[in-house]
Length: 218
Image 1 (tube, rainbow, N blue to C red):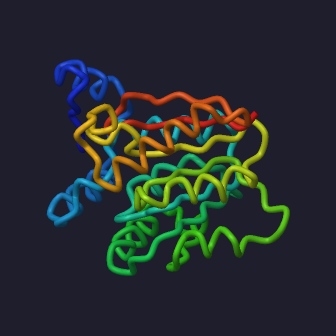
Image 2 (image 1 turned 135 degrees about the horizontal axis):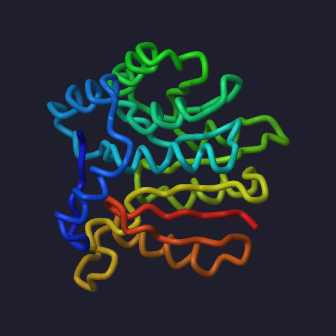
């Protein structure tokens, strides 16, 4: 099982939570194992985060979900499985190589018919959506310096009571360290401040994995 220990949660507590969360099934575990040998394996979300995201998809009764940043597909697999039979997931990524692994596991899980993958800059994909497109839930897990642009494009399209989930918003704790001034950390701090002050939404940063912000559109 894929687990993520962070600096703010006792590892024993983190493992206890993971042990009391729906475990990865054989297909998910095979994806975890295949991704483990990837040089950027740390980009994969943890199994317990995937279980949480699947729960949120079901809680908001999502029918149309947008994912920005698919990598090898663990998050998209969790989302697609949580969608109803007529649900649709639009995945935005720029890597044919990484997403080829995702495609394989969508097929194995029998959810490929629910997933549309567009290999293109995500902002271009979002701006090309038909007028009036309504998004029930979105997940952002891509280049951190573009997070605010993704948020700005997504929020007007998200329905009332819909959700935007944003990954890595605690950034290994760097967001609270004054000496951390790299572009990614600066961008994440600015986004966190922006969302906290945004009158259009309610939000909360969950200290799960590397920080997962839940944004509910009012």
